Length: 207
Length: 207
Image (cartoon, rainbow over all chains, first blue to last red; front, side):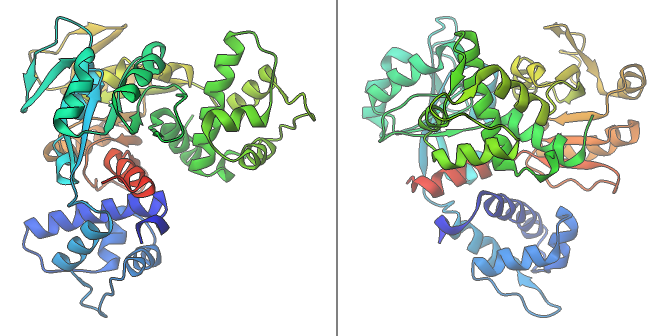
């Protein structure tokens, strides 16, 4: 099921889930596709199509049961399974992502950060510690982490990627603006923030 | 032209541009679609289709001229036009984005940060200053900024959005995991990092 959903659909489902959480906190039991579409300023037909694609059917006038829809999205997007990751590069972005509490709600647990700056090694926050990069192999063995979130300057991204792959990392969520060369069994997801912004500019003709 | 490109195409064009910059730095004059596709591990047909969509044609065996292709992407994605923005929320993420030098290469200039924490107001780095949020209206008048990059906790995102819209902001690049309610003439682009990660997990079946 999950494999058939496009990135845009998944993004919309995550946004529906945000609204459903807010409804759920307020103990509101029902929600209509029209309410969701007006919050997000998207077409109501699109909302109904998305929810039908995850096999949720609303009832005429009553809409959807908030808890059912919330649960259905969590199952489809696999929020409940834990995905353990290390953050590589404890600069501002690395620390911002490590402190981002919403990640854990979606099953992403950051088990520690790695850096080479001696001034910050050993620092702790939110139950996370900054370790020296040279210890990553033993930390992978201890924790079973196979995902790395790469928040590094461009110039060191490839050499550090080589090092963490050698240590056992299989999946890289790459925030460095760099094209990494990796073995075939390692998967890279490039987080292209500037590409996203340029799309916003193109859609809205921002000058 | 730009309006016809999908987000995925734009994202790929930005990645092609990254490779072209590296080739350009190394003074390599030509590049083939096969080289681009092997760097990015995507289908060569896709690369040729994308480049044809921006009216770049390669020559058999020789490929594309690096400087021509780089220039063509910059024109299509409008890198050269300056887009001025303020960062609202000078926490780790706000500062990370403000320090991200790649933004300016793509025409995005961050003219300052805003916060309400008295301990950090007045701090400067990279020619940028952290101002008090209460001064945003006059700073908009001085600079002509109409884009805000919102890097705030969920609980204050809506009230601050109301305040900056009142002050004149028209475009919001929203990193807060929150659905904002805004007037019809204000445009919001939700940067959904966790949605992006969940898509990675779904594609690669990460458990």
